[in-house]
Image (cartoon, rainbow, N blue to C red; front, side, top):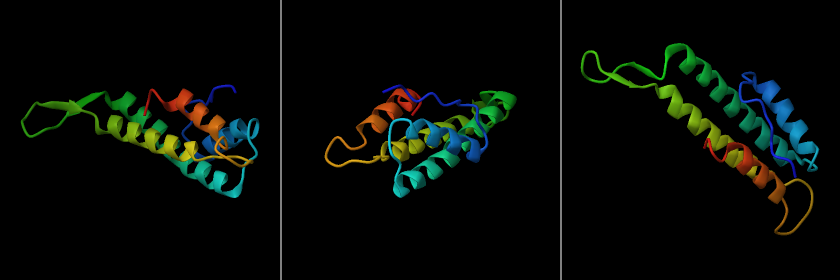
Length: 119
């Protein structure tokens, strides 16, 4: 099983969805529920990439807080991490075809390899 190699800068949900389907169809047969999980994850990953771009443009630290001149961590950082963690959870549910306890283990392994360190 190869690791999931998805461009983290993709910002369009349709592009992320197409890439996810392409990656999963090479290893698994996708069922209807799997496609729904991919649709949800694609929107979350695209939003995370959009937030990454905002943070890159505005900086990791921005003016805020309750005192004048105080800087705080950009809230887009935490939201992007949350989106990636949620997307990884949805992608881990992809089972593909088959029955039994091993159904979907390749998808879970791939998700862990790709997003485990970012979630």
